Image (cartoon, rainbow, N blue to C red; front, side, top):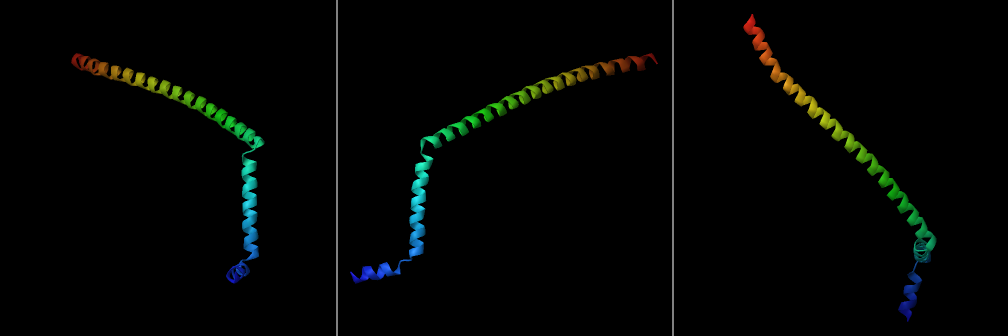
Length: 99
């Protein structure tokens, strides 16, 4: 029994109070975070995040479509250029033969 009393004397009241306050605030925090009002806030924040994601995906889709259009146009330009270059040497040969 004497050892228990000696142990209790060595306990720092300030540290024990801080520990007890931490437990109290932790318990209150858990109750607060799991309450109905908190769930409504979580739902509204999640809905806002989903709306933001949908908006971003719309923008990404537009950018992809524009990139595909640009790529298709670039391919067409290169095909026309290749056709033009294939025709040019023949015309140059004819001009050289006439001279």
